[in-house]
Image 1 (spheres, rainbow, N blue to C red):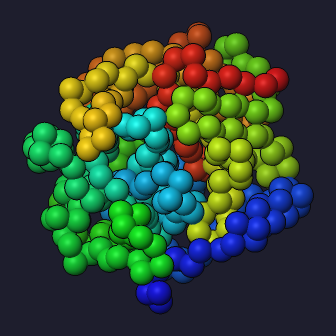
Image 2 (image 1 turned 90 degrees about the vertical axis):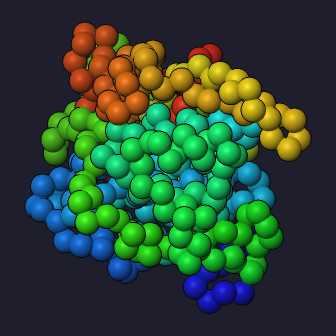
Amino acid sequence: MNGDGPRRPSRRAALLAVAALVALGAGPPPAANAAGPSAPGPAGPSPLTGIAGAAPSRPALVVKIDNAPAARPQTGLNQADVVFEELVEGRMTRFAAVFHSQDSAPVGPVRSARSTDIAVFSALHRPLFAYSGANAVFEAQIRRAPLVDVGYHAAPDRYYREASRHAPYNLFSRTPALFQLAPADSVAPPPLFAYRAPGEPPAGAGMVAVQQLSARWATQVDYRWDPAAGEWWRAQDGRPHVDAAGRGIAPANVVVQFVAYRDTGLRDRSGAAVPEAQVVGDGDAWILTGGQLIPAHWSKPSAEAVTRWVDGAGADVKLAPGRTWVELAPPGSVTHTP
């Protein structure tokens, strides 16, 4: 096993670790990576978490991370500021983890890009985009998009194969090495959400208290509110979702963006249709923050525009400072429990 690669904990150890954290009312421990941000930044809040003093002077880095059962547990999901979950072919989901305020070494397993990624991340001021490849159509789209290609084919020396895993679930990288590829004129990403001030309670027209949210659109996903930790514990396929270090996935906010998926006309090797999320336009959303669900409306007039989230009264919905997960879910696929 590569000494720099992830160590796979036993499933029993991972589940016990999560149970202990929940019992203690604690969220996931801080990132194990001691390197932290690659460069100090201004004292202002991080644009992607709203946390004060966590704004490094560098661009955003998007890493595509697999979520097939054979790819679990992943590394880096607890260090990403924002994670998007999108539908891919074969009724599976894949993650796009956005790094800015923290690093992860290693990160992965890294997998291929989809056209959905371009419309989602073109708003991030030319972010670095790390992925393992794509079909010829998507590769051409990526070259034309406002993204900086730091994928495997563009920078193969920044990736390695983890000997303890089998292909294609064994390609990893390290975010510090990828950040080194940032162009000299790179800038920080814009804020993707509005955030509440310290001590400010959640608010929004139609807000209701919820304990659990369940998505049954591909991978079975559940989020359960932990009031002691102030976080939403994530489970998938009926088991706590933990990273390779055994840390539970528990973001401060969960955003369900209801989107339609279209058939791109492309097929994978098995013949399954390759879908694309329609994230340009507008639609409904559920925003989970502070133990509350706020019905919202999302709007994004172009791929380069930042998505806006407003409640029924037209006011911007404010999130709790911290990490956020965004579910790009089809309408009617998500329910919640009061």
